[in-house]
Length: 499
Image 1 (tube, one colour):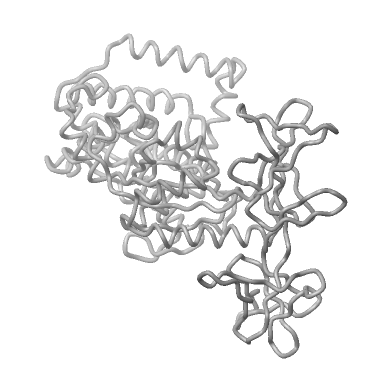
Image 2 (tube, rainbow, N blue to C red):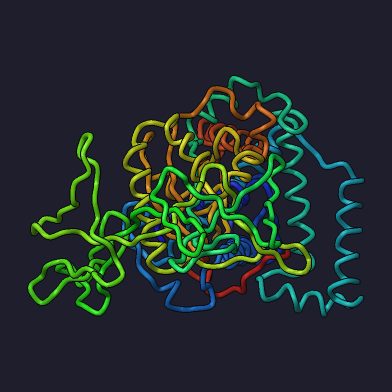
């Protein structure tokens, strides 16, 4: 939770500068050159922070959420104290920027104010149903009114004008060298692959294994003379003929006697074999085999075929399963009447096996991005996403995603990892294997990566502006009314996602 909150905050503080919306009128809270920012402005910002946290999935209407103590910024404090103070720091940045605006002698074009007034009038009609008092009633939950909202829009317009004056239209004066340095200092890159907990439903045999059928060169399944699909066998396996029909078999997973005792570890967790199956034992702790349905297993030892013996010296029994031609054959997938994929969920035991596969991949690919990319292509079940949206990986900066989504999780976890590290994430979709990799030069300039860098220019502008405000002493020119500081906090306002 702590890392999520910190990541989210980084994005919110940038947003305070990018989309500021506060102004004077009321008791003066911050003096910023010719601007007096009121305590009501502070409340409006607090409501916006609260709204963004709510949108990210946090329970902002629960008093326990705000009372929770976390170690943030080097000290123990409640979330209410932390976020209230962070909003204040963001507001100070805005105030300092307004001091710079005045010093440069900048003034808004009257046409800009006319556009703002038109916008306010439209809100009165749409939200207040033509009534100013009704719209003011809505805004009061956020510590604002129509006047505050109008002044907020004017401040936002002033900051936009300041950015353009300093850095050009849409950051046109921010050169590639500065962007590249910001990218290298603040972004991190990663790859992911999904081991899904669901599959496109298809024919399965009595052992709950996928059935493979013969397909033609176009990939269409072939029907036999009786109209049924033709099973694709691995003819290198053992043939058995019954009633004139030849079927090919091989040894499968170990055949356990599931009527016996499931083996557990010291923590009570099931112990599983190399294939991910639960191990069953007898009253003496020895492996209990299903000798009725399984077969004594054999294995190759050089040129010889020898019995497979377990650690207790007993013969291993395995399932005798159909050997399919998985290379050339094809499953018979199922669809609904609309032609949409029918999905089915893997069983608990199947997911245990898939977790073992994920763990094997994570261990094998440690420090080897090229190898992980090969595994992604071979085993990843969301490769279409990677091919379309992340052909060179995913790129994040702190707080890239403020909503509680899998991408937010990727961003948070990658930030904690070292280059070359891998981890497994358990999600509602299955197991994600996540790897952090080195940044590649100029990634933000490539069209294929554009979805990951839509906010790069704005972030560079805000970082550069904040550095300027600090270095040139503009933060020292603002005056905060400390007496009013303790009169409001984030718990006193409603969550605001609109104004």
